[in-house]
Image (cartoon, rainbow, N blue to C red; front, side, top):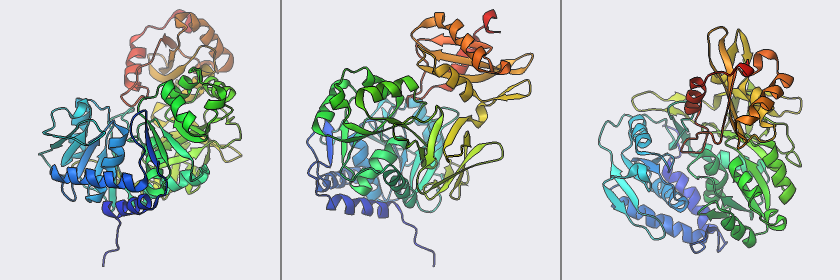
Length: 489
């Protein structure tokens, strides 16, 4: 007899029990519009959504590509699909039509469900109270996506360093990830999460959506990340858990929100990009709340977090591994993650799954210090070979990111006729080209000669992907297309 492997319906039953037992009248609140929902009230809406999806032709065991930008739509549709024993395939809600078509090719879904431009042209429109029109389309084509047994969700990677990939997750992995976060960060059961980051991304899914559905962690949804909505949320509650990104902390630091109110963000973490020291310091000075670095991946969920009392970990330090997570380094310094939250493996249409077996070899390079903290040194494929000597781009980026007037930095290797590769840097700064000489002098003082950039270009803003991550392909094109200035040699 084959062992029982929990499927989507079993995972939904877990959420059903937790939501049904919640006593909070405002377990979920949406600002500025929308009446508060209790756990049972939210559950009724999920059941209503399931009925609408079933009526639109979505049947048991379907694979449904979800591209929802509206947070409440995501909260309702995902468990609704689990209740129908379907496997959702998560995409970014802001994906373009071309990006959706690429995911359809790679994941061969049975249906697509979305509310953005990427799903325009889907065959049916579903109207649900309080939500924008949802588009549903049936995909007719090859159905050759092989999923490992126990798959309840396929998460898609961002594609910032290559084509997006599907990551299959089981019920136990989703539950373990949320438990690791809540227990390691000691999030009180009554503390509300402030949801601004997309819930379809691994960061928002793990820190906000899963705790709501499976632990009854109350949630406050902001429809737009603007200062007035932050003020409204902070006036309502005295203590909030805020998973944010550097852009949002920079916005809050300039938003002229009174320190007494801003300080109600009492538990703050930042992921998605390096947090500029200036941004973290300004937020701490204004609010009294430290912003702690948080590190995770789409493949294995949350990995590590800085838990220093005032969030004063060195630049590049991701902190200690969370409970339930083991981090080690390979021979080349490659970060290896083990634990129950590691996904099942990569999946793609027409190919056998690449199983992780509870052990993920990430594409990140790192080191572990004497205090057990993980320091990230850059991507494995981003190492720059300058005449046979290796340069970690993160080392160059840290030197420049700490300079006055610098908002963001990207260092990478570009072809060099004499040395094979050379270090090139793109800097985001409002100061313009006048900052170039100071930055190059800074590099010469702090870096070995072979690590000093051969090309440095300053931009008012750097290109980003639909998910808000730096678009490394476009940045590379900008850097390779420029001419090195004699003063950079």
